[in-house]
Length: 402
Image (cartoon, rainbow, N blue to C red; front, side, top):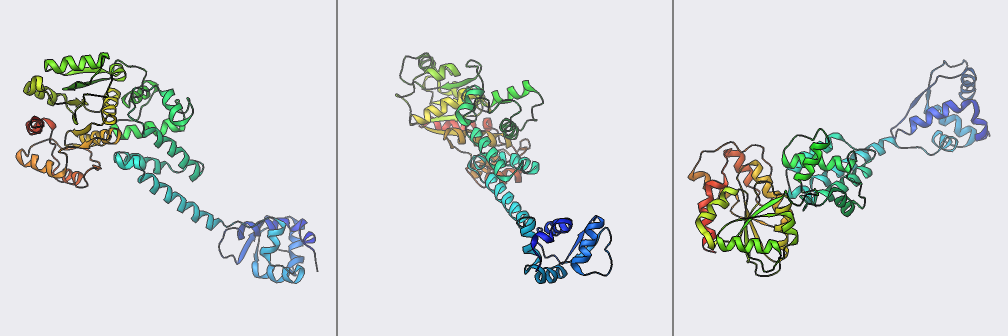
C-alpha cells in the first residue's frame, strides 16, 4: 500500500486543484486540473493507470480517484486531500452564512431604537445598505453601533466635537474628519435635515453645529416665555423679568447652562415650532403668559438643553409643530431627544384642521411619525400642509384654560 508521502510531490498540482474544487461545498464529480508539467502528467497517468499521457489540462473523475486511492492508501479523495493540503472549506455554506449575517445586520439597523424614533434615518439605512459591508459584517456592525451611539446624543447641547467623541467613543479623535464614524454620522444628519452631503470642511463644521456640536455658547438661542424658575442666576433673572413684563426671553446656550432649574416650575411646558405662534401668544396673554418654549424650526443646542433640563426637573413637555414633511421630522427629533409628548399632532388633528381649511402647499418628503402610525399615510393621501399658524388660535385656547 502506498503512503501519502509517495502520493505528493509531482501530484501536488492535482491535489491542489481537487482540494479547491471540493471546498466549494457542492457535489463534485469531475475536476479540471492544469496546466500540468510533463512530470505531473506522467504521475497522473501512472496514478490512474492510463494508457496515454493526459494533456496539459485534464478532466479527472472523482470516482476514479476514489477507487484508486481507496485501493492504494485506504482513504477517499476527500480524506487524502484533507491530509495533504489541509481541511476542506465549504464555500457554499460560508456564502449562505455571510448572506444570512448581512440580512440580520440590515434588519437590526432598520429596527434600531435610534432609527425607529427618527424614521427619517431610514433613508440613511438604505444608503448604508447600498454601500454594503466594509471588511466583514462584524466590523460593519461595530462601526454602525458607534455611529448610532453618537446619533443618540444628537442634537447635542453645544458640546465640542472632541468632547463628544471622548464621551461617546472613548477617543477624542473618533469623530475627526475622515474617520469612518464621522462619515456615517454626517451622512445620517443629511438624512435627518434633508440637506446635501457636505462637500468640504466648512460645510461639515456647519452640519455638526446644526446638530448642536460646537464650542460657541452665544450663537444658539432659545425663545422662552412664562417661565419663572427660582434662582439668582442670570438666566433665571432674565426669565423672571420677561415673564413679569409679558415678553418672551431669548436665552443663549451659556445662560441656559448656568441657570438653576429646580423649583417654582410649572407642571406642563408647551413647546412650539414657530416663533410666529409665540408672537401671537405674547399679544394674547401678556403677563399671564403660560410656560412656552419655541424651537424656531429645528431645535438648536440651547433649545434641546433647556427642554431636557425641564423634563429632568419633572415638567411634562407638550410639543406641536407644522403638519408637513419637515415638521414631522422636527417633531420626531424633539420627542426622541427630550422625552416630550406630541400634542394635537395625530392624524385626527390633521384631518380636522384640513377640513376647516383645505388649501395648503404639498407636504414634501414624508417619513413616518413614531407617535401615530396613521399620520404620515393621511398626509401623503391629502398632500396638503397644515401650518402651525393655521391652528394657532385653537392651540392658544387650550393654553388659556390651563
